Image (cartoon, rainbow, N blue to C red; front, side, top):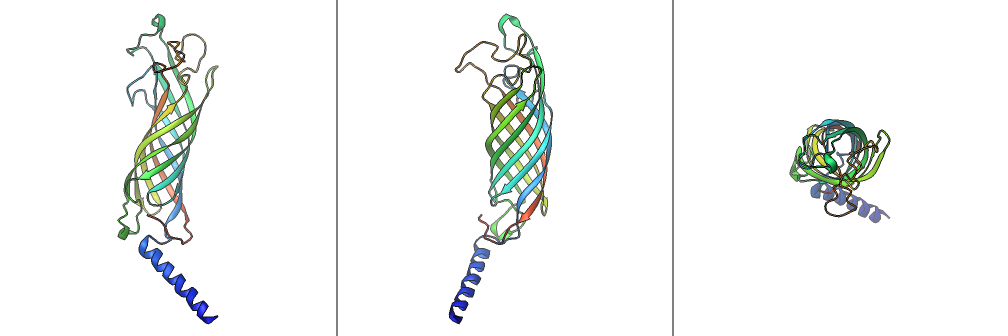
Length: 234
């Protein structure tokens, strides 16, 4: 019985040393929560090329689950505004019609993030970094109330960003994301009269323009949820 007890102690000590030497210890926080603010921009029939045209305010909440130094799962809930005007665009619409629009929208989304550098302010022996560029991709739901036409659709976000740990548990970030929609009515809050919901009456195909919106958001987050002591993979 005594030999078994000694064996268990040896195994536990060896496991702790292996965990320490191979990866990291438990002094790392798993979750982040915070806020974000910035701007949102529309792309569609009234703006086909400019990534920053017609910016409007956007703000929301962010939650992140840091799986390890490289990978994180992020959820966000935010609102923004988009505007557009056909007055100065090169497109010629049927009957030389012109229109403009303005609408607010809400997004609930989730993304997977990949840090290009192992992100942490600890464990220097693992070559961690307090600053890291990252990329993200995921899935979201967009809802935009309108005058008589509410938009509801799925969006696919794809973006890049940079995060910086200004001190233990406190992070700053900035990210630019394009949100691809699979519907052409995002820029048509009013269904009456001429609008940008399929203005060329194309049923489907290459020339049927789908709508996008882009966001540039600055964030500040606070870490919580101390890990339970198991190894943290790099």
